Amino acid sequence: MNIRRMLFIVIPSLFIVSSALSFFIFQSGIKVQNSYNVMLDRVLLYKQIAEQTQNNLRALNVYLADRSKDNNSELIHQQHELNVLRESLSAQDTIPSTDLTVRSYRHMVDTFMEQEARVIDALSRTDALAYAAFYEEAERTAAFIQEEGHELNDLELSYYQPFYRQIFTQTKAMNNWGVAVFILNTLISVVFAYWISLGITRPIKQLTRTAQQISDGNLQVSSPQLSENHEFGILSRAFEHMQDNLKELIEKEKASLEKDKLVKTLELEVLQNQMNPHFLFNSLNVLSKLALLEGAEKTSDLTVTMSNLLRYNLRKLDHPVTLRDEVEHAKDYFSIQQARFRDRIRFITEIDEKGLDVWVPTLTLQPLLENVFVHGIEGMEEGAEIKLTVTCSPGEVRVSISDNGIGMSEEIRQSLLHNEYKPSVAQSKGQSTGLGTRNVFKRLELFYGQEDLIDIYSEPGQGTTVLIRLPAAGKEEEDVSLINRR
Image (cartoon, rainbow, N blue to C red; front, side, top):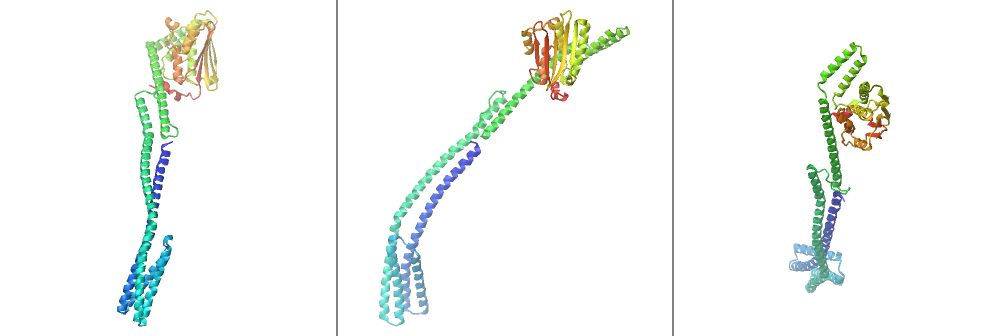
């Protein structure tokens, strides 16, 4: 479960539980308050009716003593107030235990009001004995009303007492539940807060520890394994991808450094063999002109070819060339060798012109041809053949150099394919240029950034074929600048 979903579930759940508990406590309080209000309204009404009957008696007594207009108005006002209270009593709902008593109480109020009206009526007839008797009856009725009011108050209190106790018990229980839920919510909140914070801090600590180890140079440390649905799982996968990219960049940088080191070594070896190249070029040109003047045209051509071959060998090794240049250079090299071996060897070429525009490292073919002469056919008296073939196939150009020489053992073939150093016969004879077959293979791997470009087919006495597969797609000059990185 991700952090956002946890927050969306935990926080609303705690809020709903707390709100529900608060609502129940609030409803219980409203219920108690409403019950109090109903009871107090009736109790106050009974008390007000009893007091109003006394007020009416006082107003009536004052009017009997002084039948002025003001006293008459006051008496009428008091009668009106009592009538309003009586109407309020009729509108009140009663409890079952006081229904009969309330009706009797209401009838006593009606009787009091009738007796009061009789006193006024008797007073208007100037019958002193009659209104005095009616007044005494009204006093007794008012006393009954007051006593009955006290009885109704007692009945109301007695009726609501168990109900209030129950409500108080429920309220106390709800309060206890409130305290319990509050404590439980607090504990749950602390647990969930710790859980959520742990879900945030633990991945951060793991990623920080991994980053620290990577900064210390340990690229083999494994990234934290987190759920794919977790936000930090996405960060962990991005971190792991970054770690893989760092490894890949470091490997590429190592390969580049190795290639640069190899190029430096090759340049140094070539420089050691230069022996003042300008002097050599000038000397060869002089020899060529002299041979031409003496009528030795073949010697002149051979000298020019030797000059071109030397010039090509002394060019910068970190600049790539096209396969066409390498093929022309291989032909020049063969011309020099054929002057030495004459008719003992035959050079065969099968070239597909469409494959000659691919870019290759400088001095790729000559060391392989030199290896053929030194190790393959040098001891043959006649019938030696060297074949250079360039063919095109989908996505690659195939270059093969084959001979019908003495071949090689499986041990030597494997050592060449796996770039394992074994001293060669050519080196012992001092006939190698120092570039070597292994260096050619290694430079091709570094140049194209892939292995398995070379195959060697050979058996003792059956000749040798070296097959080079050059990737043709996208190998333009600007794409091969990795050979020139320094």
